[in-house]
Amino acid sequence: MMTPTTTVPATVTAFDLVSGLSAQRPTLRRRLSAMAAMYADVEAARAQVERDDVLVYEFYDMGVPETSGDVAYGTSITYPGKVGDEYHMTKGHFHSVLDTGEIYFCLRGTGYMLMENPEGDWQAAEFGPGQAVYVPRRYAHRSINTSATEPLVTFFAFPGHAGHDYGTIETRGFRKLCVERDGEPVFVDNPKWAG
Ligand SMILES: O=P(O)(O)OC[C@H]1O[C@](O)(CO)[C@@H](O)[C@@H]1O
Ligand SMILES: [Fe+2]
Image (cartoon, rainbow, N blue to C red):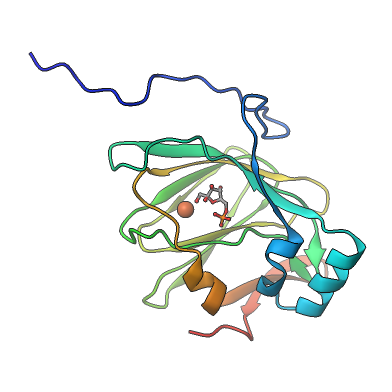
């Protein structure tokens, strides 16, 4: 009988359901200065960085091997706020291996998963606590926090070999932006979209 090969031991990690954080490892943190150019109103972003280089989001890299048999996972916490009228968001990325999906389960807060594929389709899935968004293969994805007060806390999982392609979104942007109009989030065309 074959003995299964195990490369990563079974592990248990505690994530706080309110903060989304774990005391067991440090997060990777993205401040506004690291993504000011991604917002539509770059001047507003730079002015905010001058006043206070706010923490926009943080997340975990659990160090899972980047192989197809493994599953990368962790929590991601996007803090409330706006840059001009655009809600706080993650950088967003395609997977380097485009044919890989991802799952995000919301633990706290309210927001959207914005998705688009190279074929021109885009979707914005609203989610809140207890709801999971499935990001299909080929779709770039970005978390957006539309709450004025609460962090958007999600647990994510994706194939270990998927990789991150940040460059495409950094140069081209997403087709749509999520902005506040009359107190409500709406998706509008991104005037800077360079597809
Ligand atoms: O990778 P971004 O776009 O900076 O956003 C961070 C989130 O995306 C992930 O890379 C997973 O897709 C996580 O590490 C984290 O949830
Ligand atoms: Fe991803």
